Image (cartoon, rainbow over all chains, first blue to last red; front, side, top):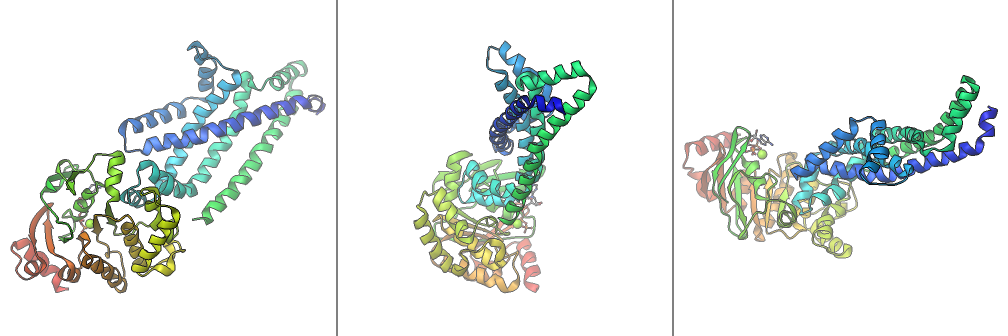
Length: 217
Length: 239
Ligand SMILES: Nc1ncnc2c1ncn2[C@@H]1O[C@H](COP(=O)(O)OP(=O)(O)OP(=O)(O)O)[C@@H](O)[C@H]1O
Ligand SMILES: [Mg+2]
């Protein structure tokens, strides 16, 4: 326990970094996922193909591989940025595929007549999606989207492991090699508690949200 | 529309369909189930694309996709069998959505006009409710008001009363009859022969994806030419 307390500022630091990763990944993957979902249901075949390609690629590639590609592949291609940026980018790309599929299943749950009615009063595809289909899809999207986002919160730890998390990670490794397994256990518990502090409130928030959208129909 | 053909896979649902409708004309389309009536109706605003032939509206060929198609659809009102009111919007919002987003009317103007239309179809009191809170007949009248709010050049009705209980059919037909009397151009797929006799200028009989017969209602109902139309009429007029 003392290891955790002695390194508390590292914990706080690492924790804040994780939070930052999560917030950026949320801000990136939600809109991107919705956009890709829109592509997948669009009337334009090349857009549909692009959406399918995107999802197939990022949903079927392990996160670590996506992260490797971003962190080490992109610099090879002449794109340079911080580890933090590449880490978040990888997480955004990966998560967007899952967000897309959750949103698409919601879109498919809205009866086809709604989109037809929207088109028949002269709304174009994107207007029909924004004003008619997506608001109704939201109801069914919240639970699966919640799972996707909680998975993303946890995946942010993998991003942390890519060196983005900084000192906490190396301290953890240092302590572990110096003091053996007990330290690792306690250290692990500290990190796990930290994560639960993020995912539990998030889960509760999602439940409230779920109830809210269920009523507002 | 001229020489229109459409396939669903192997199925040739519309076969060399030629049909022209004059401004202000009310055309009722009847025919047995599966004859392609709904499909015909839906090709007119391109909810179903066609495989060959040409459809023109007000001298303009139907655009393929995108903004122009959306603009054309805004001039074609459509009323569905299953109403298809926007479930998450109030009655008033259902009627104002198109005018605000497509016609770029101000919210105030759109609401004023929407309330007039809702009054006209007899559901003015329901403006702030949600579709699920209304009866089928009321919902369908709202759907008519929603279409009218776009000031369409033509209105398409695809079996507007088929999903309704008998006592609600007339309230919808009354609204449609008054529209017809006011000179609206209408294409109506229906099994309501009373409406066809009263309001239609012309009856088009379809069978097997073809227009088999086209005549004024009086002639069609008393002296149908084709054997298939006679057969069809004898079946529906006996119950
Ligand atoms: N989306 C579709 N995919 C495949 N086949 C279809 C589709 N829509 C309709 N059909 C078929 O096309 C034929 C014509 O259908 P349509 O709905 O136009 O008939 P209808 O005259 O309106 O019949 P009803 O009186 O039963 O409504 C039917 O055999 C139907 O099964
Ligand atoms: Mg039909």
